[in-house]
Image (tube, rainbow, N blue to C red; front, side, top):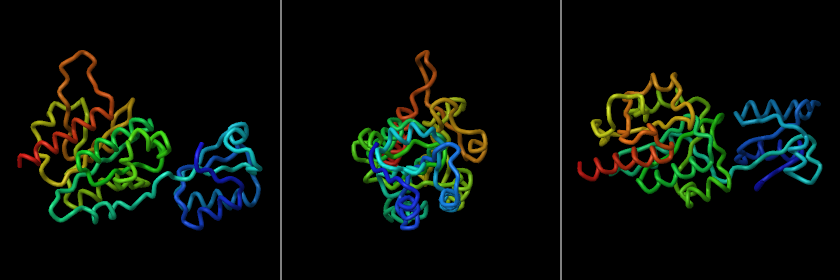
Length: 243
């Protein structure tokens, strides 16, 4: 795995220096004052942590990891307000929110479609989200180095904040009776894509202004989330080009 820092002190120093960290692996059952200090630091900085057997840490690195290994981010994350501030004055904002997309290839493919469609940013949760690693970068064909990505602690609070900014929140769900072709997507828009297996969470779905479905003519009944995102994005493009 690429971009790893290991050892308690080096990981603490990386966090305090503001380095962008994707996830921190802790050895199961490990304790001690320094580790407790590191855990507290992770909590305060809202970093993702995962308890793993020592064998996994030994596979990740060859050196003395002291029970902790940090995977550094392959990109620099931004804040949500940074995404909004970067939207050019002559463009209508378009943002993708991923609520539980955990497959790195789906994540990379959505980023690629979003960048091609002129979307202004991606928003993902800190927890229950695909890591931005080499596979995600490769699948995105470089899009993840071009399109801003924000990580947030709460998708629900972020949606409320975007609504307060005047953006309509569109849920992509096959459970809706309204088709995406029947909605007005020419205004500032946020498209919410759900997880590969369960879709958008009920709590997030309740907050969305519209629930739109992609028409299904075949017998399978649903598209892969990255394919569905591309269809949604390009309906926005179609409407805005012809607006």
